[in-house]
Amino acid sequence: MQQEVKHRKCTHCDYQTTYKSIMDRHINSVHFGKKSHKCTLCDYQTARKYYLTDHMNCKHLGIRKYKCNQCDYQAAQKGAFTKHINSVHFSMKEHK
Image 1: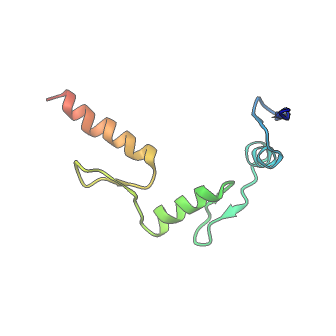
Image 2: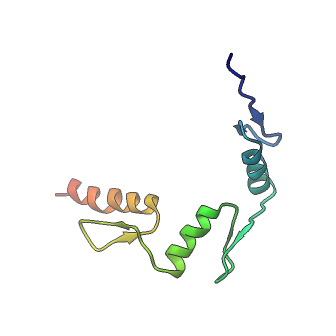
């Protein structure tokens, strides 16, 4: 017999999850603005450890893991890299 999955609903918005720890993190970061991960080199703060690691790599270590193969552009975040490709290289092809 399968155990029924318990869905936890946020009391402040429509967010749902099955894990109490994730709900606690959601409420603390989204609704109470708690940012428990702090950069030791500047004033940056975030609710997620991953974002702090990304910040450290980009801002303080100069690591850019996304490199354009059509020009010298480099980005730390995938979203910025995708935006570059779409706005610079795809728009250039359309105008040729």
